Image (cartoon, rainbow, N blue to C red; front, side, top):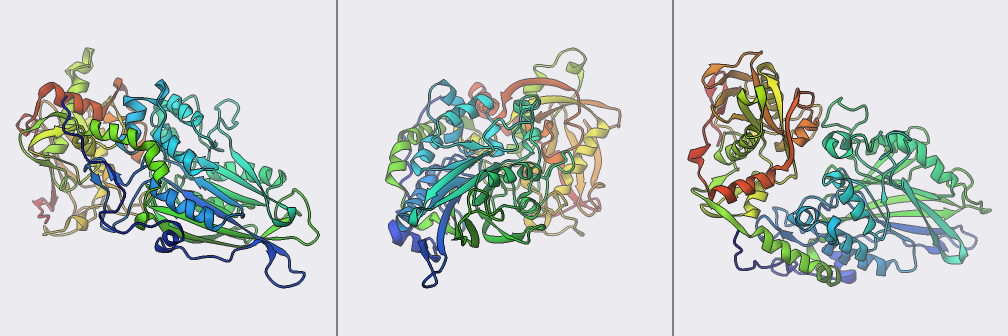
Length: 627
């Protein structure tokens, strides 16, 4: 492995747009000042006192400290010119803390913190925090001054030891009311935290933060949590703990939920609890005032869901992802006449909620916070050097840009390496079976240049931290698997020409916003091609045509070994067969590292070794044209 000249490091956004701090930063980020109450009445002599609790929130930071794209080795940018990273968020947070000085302020996060960038990966796998390193996200979040964070599903990707180590490095609690011990059913992380604020006049405002995470963890990280932790539903656990929080004197209850607002489940009915349940929590659990939503990577500046029992409108906000937004919630409470102690709103508590508003601030006009940037800069520079290390060469330029509509060599490369790794370890009767492999186009922007290939090129192709397994499946199960995968395509007639968007990301009951690219798997053979057509003129479930292995039609009873990632084998995406099929290979090898190791061992990626056109899109048996 060789290292090139160190690449430039993140320098904020000075090259693309002006950068601001303080009140100017708030104004440029879109902040609208809400009525501010510092404990005084708003309506003349004898008026009840009002106080504003400001709740600041982030979610789905995914290991982003700087406004930096490690895969492009350049400052992050997208079509909307968003910026990312907690260093920029901190500039907004500091400005709001100054603006709201002397008033109660709560800083929370809704999960998915320690996975998603090479920076996060490096300190989980290369220089792991379990062996003494400090996680850069812990350093950054401690400097921001979070009060609490909910667990996200990606917190479990690197195993419980890494998660617990990260937890130990934080100055605030990781909350998980629905992460429970299988035997006792008690939470194994704190379910909530209670904060008490002194307000003007000597009164106290008591606020509870409940943390809820995603039940899908039981599927997606089955290998890490099975037998150790269970993940009941968000509604069920909120019903248990919100009354307890109210009894402890909470005047306000805020939920940080790593679960989307629009009710749906990518895993179908594999679990009895929905994946995206934040709106259900608001509607079905009395006593909640506001919810910071995560997981869905959506922007919700302000949405209200009416509670079915009390009629209260519960505020929901979701600040997009990666730190490109900061959620601001203003919860105005009014002191009850005659006081009252310790039973919470609706139970004779001291304060009652009179208004709840939300807004979303854009970080793309502000400077990165110098304190956060300085604290993490050395680790960032180390990772920039690591990902730019050359591991080999590519004989030709390879791209994933059209991988969603045609069989391309860069996806064949993944399948070739996966199938080869599985085949090399098979024994007994399994060693005589044909080996197939599945792969999905995780990143349409992925590419290998002709010439030198770096770790960041490979990491850009395989962006998830999946491990490799092999399962034994039948021909009938392969066909069923492919039919399920082909739901990714919209039903069309004619042979085109079609734009890619005319064909892909079909809306389904489990994907109301469209089937993501990572849920379109193609299947390839190792020693002989597995060929098939996908007829997009047909309804989903009847699209796979002419399925053959080595030119011979596949029979239902025919046996294969299929290389799959742990996400699929655990049930991720709800694909049939693989989660219950016999496992014949499981070395816990990370697929990205297998790809890197293959390039290091072989030197050159040459599509002549592995590439062939094994599947195609057709309409009525005729090839279609995609522009």
